[in-house]
View: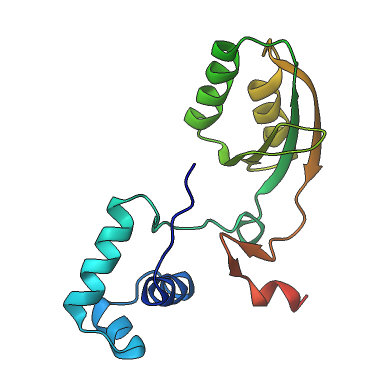
Length: 159
C-alpha cells in the first residue's frame, strides 16, 4: 500500500477531533486558522478517502463488562478462502470490538467483550472453536483501558 501524506492542517484537524469528535468545524477552524468551510471540506475529504473515521469508543471497564484480547495463530497451510471466511466471521460478530492483523508469533489480535466472564468465555469459544484455520490462541483478559483509538483515558490512572 502506498503511503499517503497528509498536510499539517489535516493533522491538526485530526488531532482536535481525536480529543473531541463532536467539535464543530467552526471551532476547529478558529483553533487552527481556517474557515469553517475549509475545515468542513478537509474533514469530509479525509472521511471520503477513508483516512478518518469518527466513531464512539465504548469503555467496557467503566460499564463493568469483561473484555479480552485474543491472539490467534493461523495454521500455515490454510487456504486463503478459509482465512477470509474466519476474518469475515470475526468482523460480523457483535462481540468483537477490534480486529488487527499482527506480525510475530501470532497473526490476528481480536478484542472481545461480554457482560461477565462466563459470557466472555462463550463469546471467545464461539469465535475460535471449530475454525479450521486456527492453530492456537491465547487469551489476555483486559483489566483497565488506559488509551483507546489513540485517546488517552486519563481518569484510568486515578485508581
